Image 1 (tube, one colour):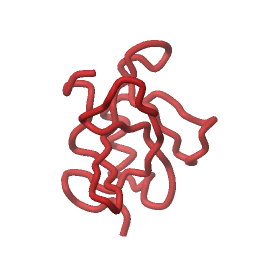
Image 2 (tube, helix red, strand yellow):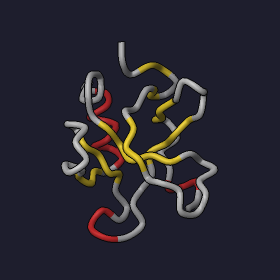
Image 3 (cartoon, one colour):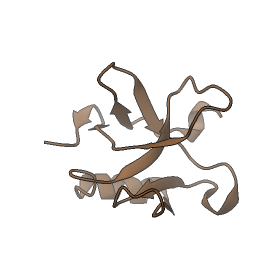
Image 4 (cartoon, rainbow, N blue to C red):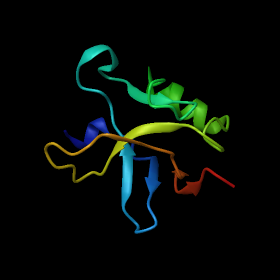
Length: 96
């Protein structure tokens, strides 16, 4: 996976300081899209464009719930593709 597939303005940061970034799907029905669950439920992921994702963040759709499939930039082969609640957008906290 190359750097262009990640959305670097959005990330989730763990308590240990590790950052995870949304990435574009590479195959299947979500190829070229970010995988998002506005409810946070694992069976409710939908593919959205970068603009749709940014609009949802700016509208507060992730201020209380919701997850995005994310990976660290140093992803290793076979690493789990987990959903994280985004914590920052353009360096600012998403949740109050």
